[in-house]
Length: 278
Ligand SMILES: [Zn+2]
Ligand SMILES: [Zn+2]
Image (tube, rainbow, N blue to C red; front, side, top):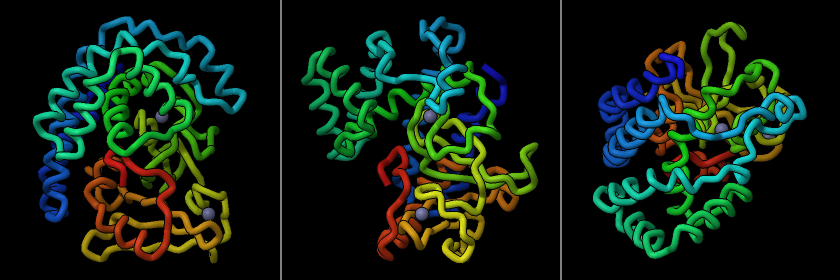
């Protein structure tokens, strides 16, 4: 696993105190995320030198056909249940009442039932809110490590779903990169893979007419924009890394939940919900 990626979740943990200051209204969810990310970091470290037994030999040809590299339902997740149990124990301690209820429901199921619920979720990207969160929090670090072994052309994919796992991005960001100054990238809500996407294009319907896209910003945190589309009424956030170099897009998205509430009050629908479901 490349050093930068390995360090990235460490940066994410280090970002949390700053975010708590910037977004005091989100302190509680950020403290909760601290537990989740610390746990995930431990899983990644544990997986680093292991052979995960995941066959990625068809990744190139799948990507060439416009399909995500991995077929998630084709992976045997059974061996990875060993990371689910400690996650459930953790969530039982630090989760909200609703999360703890979801935990005890999952604990009441047999392994096969859990795996079949998981496969249903992966196939349809649909589950009740708590199961969705638990499944994503569980698989995220595993897929993050797998994704590291998959190569694709970040500049050529250009689609609105992840080239690695097929899930949708919950946030986007702008940075100066090889792809261009002020290039926009999407970040996968599940495996956290980033890929290039046209900056002035709606991530939901593909509309790229300038006068049919709007941008909103909260003046107090003006490095986070909301891009809304007049054609389909969907929105996605854009984190401007040129203004806030230490930003961690998926965490900025979680911290700035007040922007989601604002956009949703105006009738806009988020293109994809983040790990916590908003
Ligand atoms: Zn992904
Ligand atoms: Zn649109």
